[in-house]
Image 1 (tube, rainbow, N blue to C red):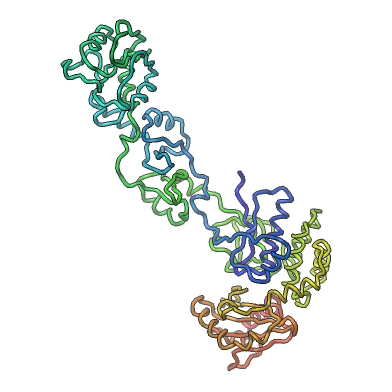
Image 2: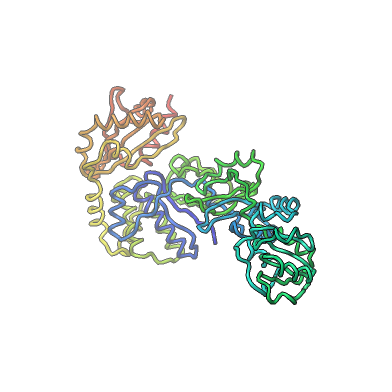
Length: 540
């Protein structure tokens, strides 16, 4: 199965970020790439929620990070055995294995009980050699028959496991000591008949293909095998139950939720080379080896509506970026290899996505056309933003036709339904659409809210400023700006705080004592705020 491809926009996603990610994932699927899915990096705002609900599109699932976890790896998936399985079964599997040199031992629910290696089995084969092995290790009667390829021809052994001793040939103690728990392996039919008559032995195993002649009336189990007595004796150890040689020690393993970066050091210093990986219920998911730390595949991602690392997902440096589709400045994203980049100076990423559908001659479903329309109207403030170009308007008009709506009427309804901030706390308003920018030596956080109810927000400047100061202290940003955009007046109120306030003062001709300023005609964070701040860093 092909590795999944994650498509997502930036943190604190706006309508363009969410809708363009959904639409681009659908475009990829239409071209035959089935393993691609759209995700979001944060909570969707009211506007985006309105657009998705209006056109009947589900919100994409939340993706908290793109870091590699053990469950993302192509883990070894060795055969699982149970405690009652014979050693020979484990030995045969290990001899054929080309991956993990461990066999996990699990219970009936798949929960890990222990691990077995070839060394564990070899130790048993070498050290176990006397008739009392069944006192120290479990040997199930059924396993013994299976290992010897034996044929039970008379009677039955009264126990599930061999409870007594296993005697060989003529090395039998005083007959009165023999009980129905004991087993005899012999190639001497006369001895077998005598012991069957004079003792209460539990089972007689005849080797060399002997038939049960003279044993027809035996009260014990009689088993016939074709192999020699010497081979039969050696095969007894192979019938020992795996569970009886497992050592009671702490299993060194990892959770499937563990990050690769967190387990590397543990694996490097451990004497083990292979480690079990369990899920949250303790069930085995696979086995990881040191090889996995060298050969693991990075997660594959496509960035939509952003290309700055600090606006993207945590763990991006461990991912493989396949594509970037964006309409912002090119910033600090670095990749490990070549990739496809589509960046255009349009007002909205959705406009680029629309073009790509057209270029590939792929029909746009009505609901996808609708959410792309909503994204364009949102990002261009219904074509009033200076970032808006004729391509945006043309795309919106065509998308409106495909979606079956009037773009002006829908735009008014969308902004009316989504720009009310009644019930929002100052902290929530600040968090609606906040982005980080590296501008010169400064880290600048700019939050923008679009509203039809401008004064209800600006009248609460004191509380907003207090929330901004708290954010400044906690985030480490040098400058925090809240941009309250009046859709009707087509201007924005800027509230400013932070140790780099002088940067905003220079950029927007503010007075030193000013905490805020209204900028007529300024509605674009990307094209009207960030460029001025960039220029201000170059002023002496």
